[in-house]
Image (tube, rainbow, N blue to C red; front, top):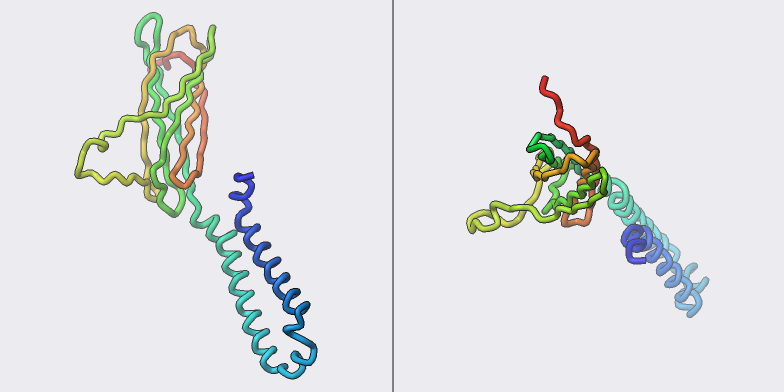
Length: 200
């Protein structure tokens, strides 16, 4: 229910205001605060008020359209994920996977505090899943470094991780999930064969 209200907040507000105006007009007419005689006697004033009301409704409609469509698309946060994994021979039983996840801001506004969760699914004689969500932050212990972290438009931030994968594992699937402070989520996945690429 909460998710439905969040997704349709603008539409619900619009219809709520419209219903409130209809109920207000109905109550005023029912209580005879405005009668037919009053309308005839104050025709000029009513025409002026009608013009003002039309202008107000037009402005409200324009603002609603702007926030619902133009602002929602032009100024919405947009990101792009790129997963790159290299497989290295470690020993007779194990390969070393070095995975680099790059997150690029391809929108027109800054993305604040992007957080990466990397899901690693190893498929072979056994299936294993590992979730990596805690990353080393070299600026965390430096007092002079600002703690607010954001990615400006056209800028990229990177995450690097390495894992030892048994050679009995045939395929490894990496799923990268990036979320921002605004609760916007991006996701991408890549499958890697657990074999060392031949050098050319």
